[in-house]
Length: 218
Image 1 (cartoon, helix red, strand yellow):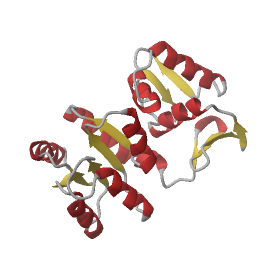
Image 2: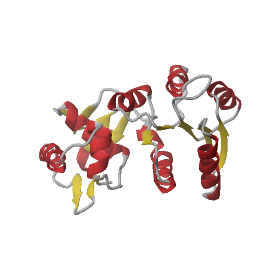
Image 3: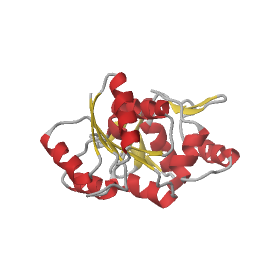
Image 4: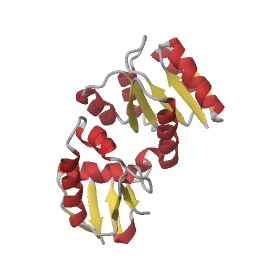
């Protein structure tokens, strides 16, 4: 697996490169967005890690260009920009994950492996087949049961999408707060929304893993 990194902080870039190389990945890093983009067009990579505030082309604009050109390479933003609007913009542009600096390198490993495993929420799939007779249409953001749409609120769709992206893995309450709400939300409130969603589905589809979070069965 080959990973390309855009990070203008030299010490951090080298740390990430060495860490991922120790895990067995082939890694190359750049500090400028334009040089990064040239490399990506010349060589094939399986994943890109993007800082936002870098010389040349910034990370947001770079991913926008890639997606406009039809390039669907999985992308993770690794940035100190932590405002909810920045988080939302990253996902709107087509990133698979968003890591906020500072972070632990072990967290980076978990997120990288998860994105590579799930190929960025099955981005190549128009419809994702789920257990118990359900399917999810990615483009239309529709949950279907035996080809009949199940009405979901906007919040419920975000919860379900996060669970689908992490199929088979436990999603913690903290992850729901960060990726669905973009900010801290009382855990009781999060559980209320999840339980409302669960009541609309087969009771076995979303499992409560005591003390850890929730997961979608596979």
